[in-house]
Image (cartoon, rainbow, N blue to C red):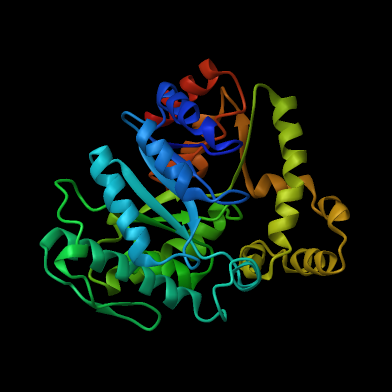
Length: 336
């Protein structure tokens, strides 16, 4: 199993040291997210600073961006690194797209995401062949690329595209057009087994693809600690994240699989009335445990092997212990 580590928190100038540390720890993939900071600058810095690790966005928000411009960025970084970059895409939710990113009226995000990815692939095919490979979709159009604007071929494979998904419609898109699926942090093995995997497989087959060719990241939250007390403290801290995600109606399908629809509605009502500080108290530790891969450094590899056995790669909390502890855990996970 491949191991994904995180970089990009804090100041931009810290990125090179962060990604080099991940390489020393033996991590396979370095991923940066897009929360407070714009991600593509961090992605570029990490790609330049790295020597051997795959560098990915884990994830960036698609719709504020042009698929052609993102295709250009990925193409050039793939050339520079000798084929070591990948892209993790996410849609975000309606409110952030309309009110933070100004992406226009929210409509059919799954269809728009499929358009986005197909348009990127058309651009890459155009660069590689030197001939226009046009694409005209519902949301995006790529029908012009004169020779003066064509980036030319790479001698490495196209960058891989991983798609973040929770609900069935976005999961279908991953099965049809993505190289891999990134289950949301608010995901459980039960939900993956009952909803995600059947949906992904059916969509891949409908496109004439082998479902085994779509890799899956180990989803869910993680609580990792040096001992049981440290793990318990992490679980307590994660109540706020479970409460936050659980308050979002987009993710209530996960609660439904566990018979927790009432908790989802309660958290949503608390969020719209501004009771953010009280929401964690509404989430029991039993619920947090159900939604979390948790254990000590000594037990975590076995826990991952048993709980996330559907995955070909897994994200870990590489900041939870010493570098020696993390490196040993990485070695154990890679042996799964």
